[in-house]
Image (cartoon, rainbow, N blue to C red; front, side, top):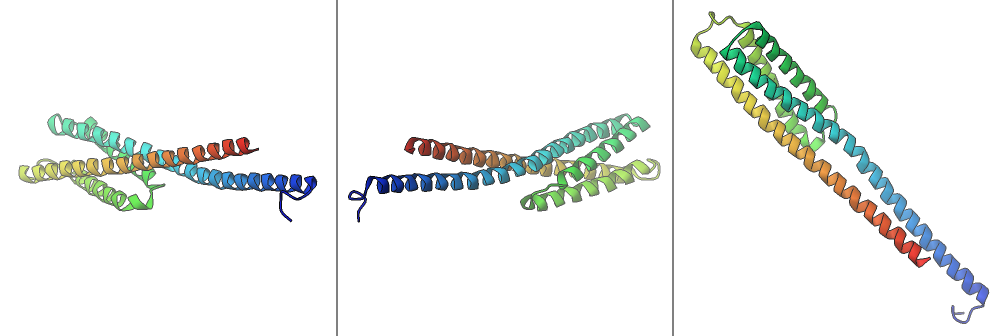
Length: 193
């Protein structure tokens, strides 16, 4: 028995069943896509926190560089304390960035940790050594090594910051596409009904 030869009651029932199936299909698709949006949303907070921590690291690194310059030119315990505080701020920011590091960024993060540890060791030796105990050549070599590590840390921090920013942009773009699909599906469903 075909649809066109069926009774009115059967036609209404069949049509109603088709509409209900369409609605359930769109609801299931929307639920699935909203779950994907929720998953993407959970990635934004750690990424934003990591980006903030990396920016704090860069700021502390910049302060450290300036205070080191002042320490080498002017000297004095206030600049030595400022250098130590800046390094402590760098370590705090680096630890915060590492709490939610993405597995793809882990190698670069570990390299940044290593460079920061080397920098800390060199700073400890430089700041704890009396200038009369070492030759000017040794002191200059330490200074060159410190500034080399500062440059390496800057580059690694910039790489991590760039990767994190790209990741956040991709997440936001994916969310936008999913929400757009949900809206289109809902509009189509309303139009059909």
